[in-house]
Length: 473
Ligand SMILES: *Cc1c(COP(=O)(O)O)cnc(C)c1O
Image 1 (cartoon, helix red, strand yellow):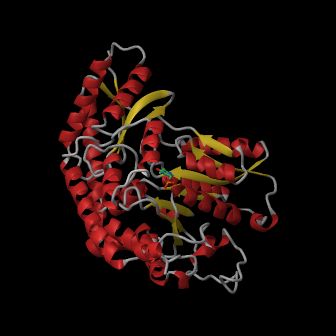
Image 2 (tube, rainbow, N blue to C red):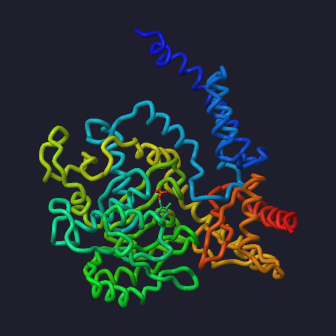
């Protein structure tokens, strides 16, 4: 055998480097959780960082050194001062499960390519169907919320229209109705489906950033008058920018009355289903024809895996009805165990293993503990902002997302000021927060993802923002 290949697959080398790496990662975890690492993000301009890593290959370093440099220069999500985007702070057990999945690399397109991971996937789907209160629910895991949204909307199109679009192609002009606060992936999915900008009907939101459901009827009428065929309404549970849950009951009733599809985007907020305290935010979730939940956001798994759950099992098979003779024998057969019949992917990650590993180790109570804690903390932070003279809250948080801005009351251009504050804070790197635009205004935004973030960190954040503002003025 070729020497290089021999070395690269050497079990003893793997054992040695693997142990070293686990040591390194455990140290990373320790220092991050304790907050001993000062920086959450070591900000560098993209071109500078590129130059550095481009030249890195010229250096003769061990893989241990490489991993060490990689860890040091990456964003440290496990640091309690990480409050940025909605990315899970992964549980260590999911990293172990990912490693197993990466080495076993069972393909998952059909049962015989990944038998165990396939049945674990079925277990996960049934588990959520039951949680949601929809025992006949069915679905699968797919690579992220964006793909999950596209898949669900393609299913909506197959289910709602008399014309079999998959077979005959599009006829007429289709449209979907979405909250103007919907994630941009909904827009993307609609455009991929050929709906164009005209086919994306934005429903305005109220002062709390909730969809104004009384606007559904008039905008639906207008769309029909314009010659559009509306196939679905997309609800937020919750929205990305402000973390707002829409009124699912009203949306579901409207969809029923028009015989159109009710899709719930619970990519971020679906985890609330585990929290007795907050699951009421998802009341009527069982009425949605399709729901998506990212396991890599509020369910503490690593990127990327998303649950797509259908109310009717049949709908989950309609989307990509396709002949692939070498993979399965009969296109008409519902073969739950051949997942590629229902997903866009052919080869797919062994996603189920990571989520199952969490439940295997800790049960489902860990999700309640986590979600409830983070949602509580957001409410507490909102209170701190309201009590503070120099800060303004955008809206009462419904989830663990809080939008606010610095407002010293004597500043004319608050957008510019808050933009600069956020940029400085990024460059400083001691906290990681993001920003968003609401009704044309810039707001600072935190998503309290980290289970080690405490009130003290939030007090320090406000202090840091004031210090930055002082340094600017
Ligand atoms: C994150 C998010 C998405 C997109 O999911 P990805 O997994 O990032 O592709 C869609 N909708 C909402 C509400 C989200 O928060």
